[in-house]
View (tube, rainbow, N blue to C red):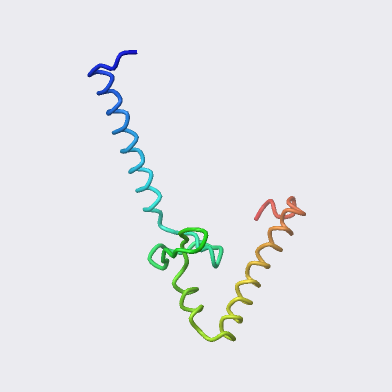
Length: 107
């Protein structure tokens, strides 16, 4: 195959298209109104989140959990117990609904 001006032009056009699509995808991801907090395991409004660098990479975390982490150990433990109780209740509710789906079909 010979490389001509036309094949080079097509190649650069394809690269430009790929670059454009990557920008559009980044915009659509970054414009999401909510973000997932890896600490709370829930979604929060974007303005209440901060991007942190952890040992496994970049992760979003809500400001509330960051501020609570700066408090005394007893307060942090109380917060952790509340979050754990919420998570446990959600799992139990999902388990209950999935074990008896016909009962909850109308809800």
